[in-house]
Amino acid sequence: MRLQFTSLQDFFAMGGYAGFVFGAWGLSALVIACLIARAIIQGKRNKARLADLRKAAPHSKASDA
Image (tube, rainbow, N blue to C red):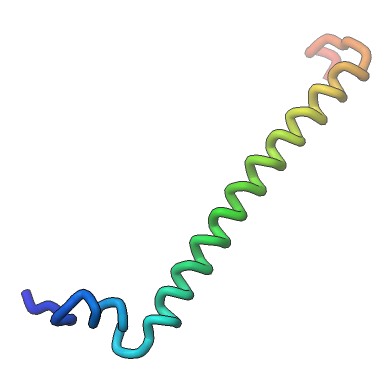
């Protein structure tokens, strides 16, 4: 197997494209982290809203649906 880069410094330089490569990876990781955080926050809000709706609604039997 032949390595593309002769040193770690060459790897991090990426032939002059390091800014694009690592920038793209960083931006992708940031977007994924934001989506995960948003899903967790929205899930907590939905659970709280559902609990409030269940408290406010009159009790009904499951067969009424």
